Amino acid sequence: MGGEMEAHGGSRAARELLAAAAEGRALMLLEDASHRADVVFARVNPGRWTKDGAQKPPVYVILIDFADFQHVIGDEAARAAFNEGWAVLHEIAHVVHDSADAEEGANEPGACETLINRMRRECGLAERAEYFFDLFPGQERTAFTTRLVRLAFDLQTPQLKKKRYWLMWDANLVGGIEASKQIAAR
Ligand SMILES: [Zn+2]
Image (cartoon, rainbow, N blue to C red; front, top):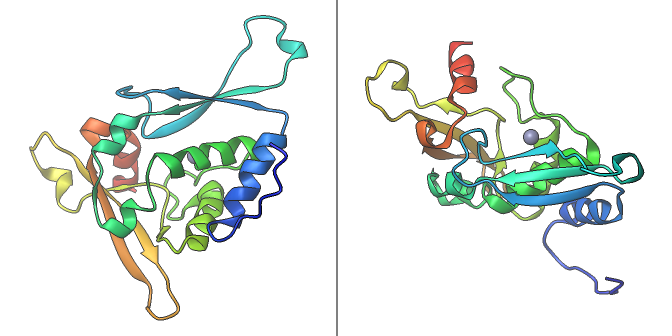
């Protein structure tokens, strides 16, 4: 703490978020939630002090399901933009800015991921095109026990036009399939 080191490169928005988190009143705990069925990659829950809660700062528990990330396959450019680190930044942004995710059925990244996309852009990485994943085309009616889903990322560079990259995983292993069914049925 207190260092005057100047940062070069990377994401300015990410540095601002982490500085705001460090200076903010809320406490955040990181918890390993690997293999938990109710955690799809990561999420944040309000915590509760067991004693003297009224005198203490608000506390949040950021749950990270590391095992879920092991199931992700797909394009290198998309994988660089979606991992445990980006997930933790996303949950910290929820706490610091009280920002919302996309509404169910909305075809956009949502307020919280829009900030994370700015960080990805500042790092020259692909941006998440939408918040909700979709069933892989053709998966709706298969009898297979796998439920492949996909999530789109777009990379925009001055030289190139927008290029789309994909991530895929088996939602039966990762979870969150109920939400995706609603999206597919929209
Ligand atoms: Zn979120």
